[in-house]
Length: 401
Image (cartoon, rainbow, N blue to C red; front, top):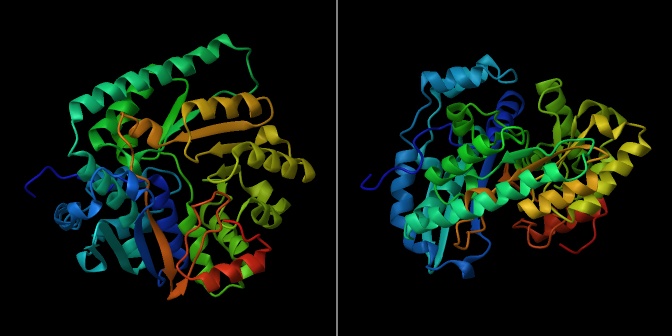
């Protein structure tokens, strides 16, 4: 490539990509899948993303040359929940250029990955990271870094100030979740290392496996929407897809990685499936859409109904968090339940420029549409309105999205 590569390691992705990948490889290796890139705020871009097409194609070419190194495989194999046969699969793995294509229509950049799920699901996070970095390379990096350092210092001061408040039963714990929408790899590394140095008792890990390995942090993550959505197309009764996905997860990890994602069909529909069996087997829940205070109260009420001590469970918040919002949630819930706060864009791309709101989501599996019925307006994603309506009907979810 004529310009520096954005992605230089296949560990440069979120941990939950590996954990979902292993589970699906073991249990549903023949699934065919389609993932599609979308920019949710194209009007906020300073220039059309379609201008990046030549650079994106060059970056994809380079991504498809990478292989896991023996040191990287040894690191993954050292994680208790990663199995040796999955490491053997990764030793052979290489992204296939034939499974991903990028093209432009007017001002719109399109990227689509299509093929066996165990060969295309890994594209998501590197693609988002490379589009972001290629976009932000057109701005003044020195000015952005200076502003980013100023803003990060203020956030660190806010968290330090918790020490002046009355002690709460559970500590404030922070996870860095910013790889997909970061300003750059260099800035994510600097911001994460700064948090690690300045907040050693608060900063508990990062979703970026490469940074976790190189900085000596704990890699953080369990499952994302695509894992549960895949089960909408695996032949189980649609009403039972969440229970089937959770059951497979329990069997795969047998006590590890016990934070369940709740918002594929909304919190109410999730809790209807999250019975005493699952509530005892999972360590907690992750919030990713809807009002986080309402969500948290629903979670606590559900644990109370099941007579489970909430102090033995954890609620993880990860939906567009700022430090201000995380601290407000902490003050509200910290005397009642263990907490965790996964902050992404506001740590890895708060540098004075408007971040891109980009996603690359699973849209079809085995030729069938899949969907997420988000509790937040604008986050529902499905290309088939008929299937979306059917999913709402099956789960008794209202029409508002």
